[in-house]
Amino acid sequence: GGPPAPSGGPQPPRRGPHSPSGGPQAPTGGPQAPSGGPQAPSGGPHAPTGRPQIVLADSALGEVPTDPDRLLMAACYPGCPPEALFDHWTIPALLTRWWPQVAETDPRPGGTYHLAWPLPDWHLRGAYTVVEPGATLAFTWRWDHEPADMPTRRVVVTFEPLPGGGTRLCVAHGRYGASAAEADARAGHLAGWTHFLARLQELTCARAA
Image (tube, rainbow, N blue to C red; front, side, top):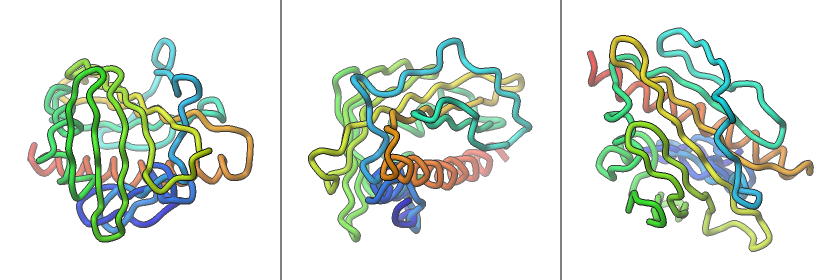
């Protein structure tokens, strides 16, 4: 899936949230670069229609079964309300505590972001397509080192309030084609998101304690 997460956040996928060759693998400290990152087919993966019924125990994290052309992850963040968790995805000083080593963001529809891991020279860029604080964040996803013919993917993050002030977070990444390279990209992203969403849990749980 990609290089281990750089210190400081998920590393670039082997080309996706994983490293350059296809999926996010956790860099030593950051999400890895995708093997192209999940590509957004004419618009990328859409947020699940009618959110799937996801039941998770406190602090649980894992993949949710869905179509093979998408990746869906879900995680619970007890004690961290949606608005606060949303900030961890859009404010550079918070983003760099669990994902990239360097972050530049302009969280508004049409605004751009740039996440970087300087030492391995990984750069993830995209544009925000939906910005609804505390509810939904959607953005395109592409690594600088990806081949020109690698599709641009899309990520949709939804924040659902839980009783007691926590949040159930869902990350939809895609879309993926049927080739072996696309399957590798999806696997890399799965590894990357698993690593970095757990880092985000550790960070927010420590603050809530």
